[in-house]
Image 1 (cartoon, helix red, strand yellow):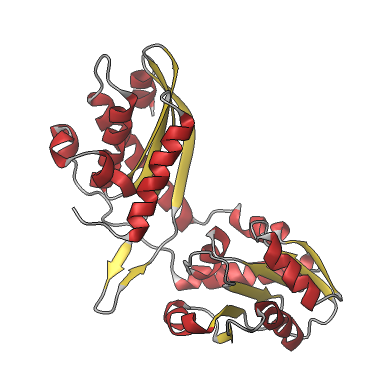
Image 2 (tube, one colour):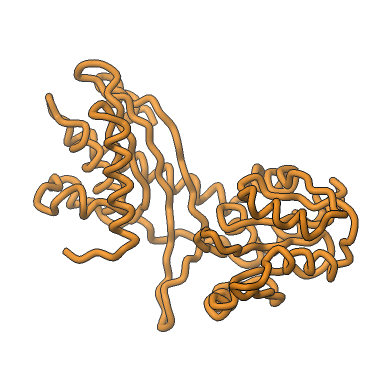
Length: 308
């Protein structure tokens, strides 16, 4: 079996997490199925599960445009002139862009009026332009230049010399600190009224994705529960569930923690992703839909799963 650096790091993180949690807790994720369970160890019932992601409708460009328009409307209502976002769930929600965070700034500025703008390292410009679907204003910075100055230039070019700029809640402090030093006349506030004001209201397309994710999670739980036996190690239970999710075409994981002898309390999450492969590359088409919960226990899970 071959692996790359990213998968190696994921597996290492999983092992480290299990060590920190101790022997009473186990976590398994679909990313790590090949590391935590050999194919011959997967129960036949789980091996026979079909892929069930056909018919999933991705979030389209028109819906993302409507989200951007709503964000700009909320900015006007909250007297916020622009919002600044790092890579993550909100950037993906508004633009469909997935990008890993690092010490180098990659950012999105959504102004209340005018075209949105991007900031990225110069050496990443070509890849960024291939992935950007909304906005053509891409400001780059060299290693010896200041990315914070690029952000301040975007504000000035949008006519924002004084006023209020919303900072997304997950933005790291050193980025915020660098921006405010380059734009000292601006007042920086939380962007939560904008991001949450959009994301807390689900469209029919989002609800359909949430429902599909929930349905697949329950199918995986039913299949995993059918493999349950007395004295079954929680690590095996978690691995079976991750394998079931993987067979269904879902990316996700399961967290198991033994609360008392011969009983398991299970925290879980699952998410649905759809990929489309073309001649150029694999493109990520729709948002991760995460379902989280807790409370499945040996002796109670069978009844809980049947009733769902």
